[in-house]
Length: 167
Image (cartoon, rainbow, N blue to C red; front, side):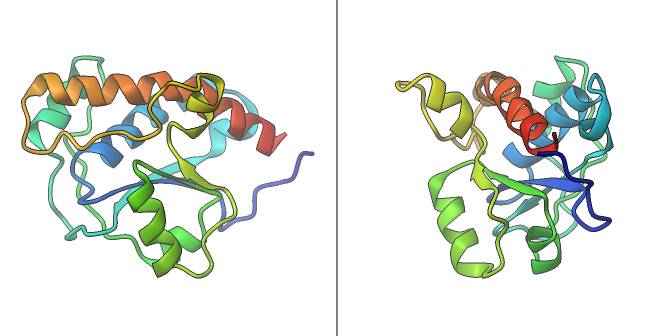
């Protein structure tokens, strides 16, 4: 059923640990994907945060490089810690791992009902597909590209969920 987006719940949030690798990559990929959408999806804002992030750190060099290879620029990204204001006012929250989900559930009592793993919808259609997106931090560019590609796989099913949610 279609429902108008409230003024405060017009964003989706991606969560990882430090908000310098996975969640900024997911944010950049989804922002890029939303540019081709019409209707309510096009009006969504996208954020990323970290459950153990320091404010103001840039995205890792390899995260920037991995996305630059697909013509997406996240070089202006600066890390942001997960706060009640950001998490609890999100339309939906997408975490990279089950441990991120556990921390979110413990830390934020008013966590949105629509809180999932980023690959949850994709993995539901392919039972042997991994649910989690491994942390590439400290590894070479190939690991970041693999991380990026695992996110790209999940985007169509994530967008399908959002289309259905927004009517």
